[in-house]
Length: 280
Ligand SMILES: Cc1cc2nc3c(=O)[nH]c(=O)nc-3n(C[C@H](O)[C@H](O)[C@H](O)COP(=O)(O)OP(=O)(O)OC[C@H]3O[C@@H](n4cnc5c(N)ncnc54)[C@H](O)[C@@H]3O)c2cc1C
Image (cartoon, rainbow, N blue to C red; front, top):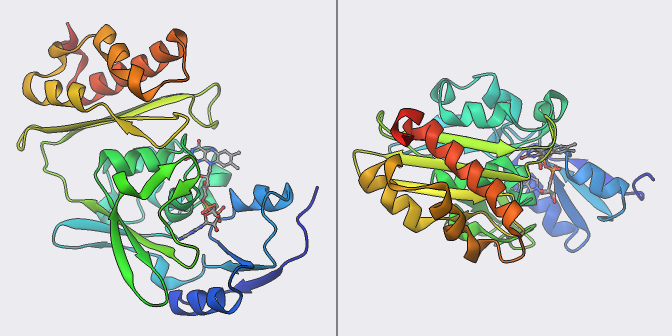
């Protein structure tokens, strides 16, 4: 099947994109890398009369280091982060996250903002953005606002974005040089969406930790109690059985086999973050 006919508009700035969107209110959709929208158009799950391509807008691109955060433009592609095009993201954990998304052809066009807006529960950026406590910068014709990632995604494929709003950028807090990070996902084969995933962030300086589980039926969810134990006592404080028990409330529709898969994704992320020798 091919997409139903639509009119294509290539915006040259965020301002123009929002203006076009307002002009065709109710009939338009933004397009970034088209790696999710393209299939939805072809399957006719989306049938907008107007498609507004924002991938060429300079103001949606680029990475800046601000006082407390690294600001990543919504249309920065997975491949640009993977390839270390931006100095501030070189050797940053986000580089590793980007390199493991799908296949290179998809990473060449897919964007971080498009992925967050699409809000696939198995996507890599929704998980990483939560683990890093990122803020989403959102823009409409009238205002801009910032929403913490943990409030941004409401459910599978559902976010707080209003019809006329666009993701402008993502702010990742600057992390201490001692912060530790672990990320693990189980995929049936390389390049496929995760079946179970986990991202772990531990800062020994502030004694904070976040353990976020992804590829659920809903938005990624935190295992706060496990995180608190890790922050205080390290990896030796938790077992796989503890993790599987902690998973029960956030995996109501899963069976024990699934929970062990998620549990192992969590355990492996913890080991990557904190070192397997700690696990003994
Ligand atoms: C075969 C395949 C395998 C994949 N595997 C993975 C994987 O393993 N992990 C993973 O994370 N992803 C995976 N993806 C998804 C891929 O990462 C896409 O890049 C991503 O989901 C969407 O980004 P995009 O820039 O292509 O957005 P688009 O497809 O252009 O847009 C997606 C949706 O977001 C909206 N949108 C786009 N940009 C914005 C914005 N700035 N503000 C507001 N709304 C916006 C569009 O209107 C549309 O509704 C896969 C995709 C395919 C086709």
